[in-house]
Each structure stands twice: as structure tokens, then as C-alpha cells.
Image (tube, rainbow, N blue to C red; front, side, top):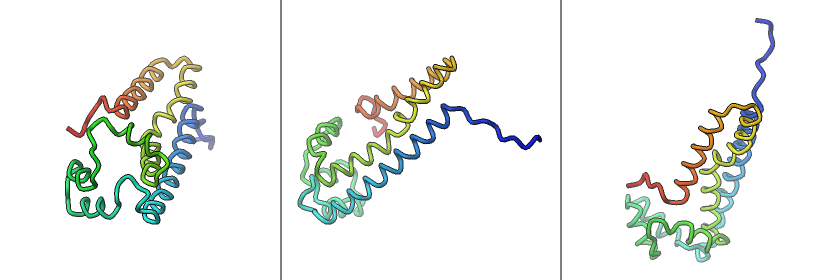
Length: 145
């Protein structure tokens, strides 16, 4: 060995930096939201006491929504989320959504770098993964059954 460290590709550096900082930001937003949810329970879409009781009693998601008194149908998440973004639990939903979508945002500069280096297989695979994330977030793909 000559003692030299291998050079890390720019696409990986950009991906890592963006994934790191967005994950940190989403954790901080979610933590702040949890504090606000507990401090201002009446300002929420869902009463946290009712939701926590339903969760700890082992109820399924449909039973939790019913116990909370919110009529929620699959696919309504974005309508409910956007409409209530400035409530404490809307802020929590934003933090979770941001954290779950971190790969989407981190792949954007990586795809740009792959394209500059003419690594088209990586461009295609990255765009395919990004499309899957967008489909999952839109509700068109449902893994929950």
C-alpha cells in the first residue's frame, strides 16, 4: 500500500451530505413537533391521548383513525397533511415525510453527477428509484395491503 486514501466520487459525497443534513433536519422537526403536540393537545388534528391509548392497546390503523374521530380513507394523507400543515401533528407529519423521502432529495445531485460522468446505467437506476419513491408517496403504490 502506498498510504493514499481512495478518492470518493462526487456523486457519493453529495448524496451523503444531503442525506445527512435532511435526516438531521427531519429529526429536529419531528422532535419539536412531539413537544408541541404534548404542550398543545387541543391544537392537533388527532387527540394525542386517544391516539396513544389506541396504539398501546394494539389497535390497527383503521381503528386508531376511528378512535381519534377522524374520517380517513387511504389516499387522503396529502389532503389532510396540506390542510393541517401548521398544526403540531401536521408539523410531525412533515418531519416524518421529509425523513422518509430523504433518498429522493439526495439522489437529485447524484443523478446530476452520474450524468456529467456519462454513467447512464446509474442515472437510469437512480431515476427509477426516485420514481418508486414518488409513486409510494403519492399513494399509487400501497405496500400495506
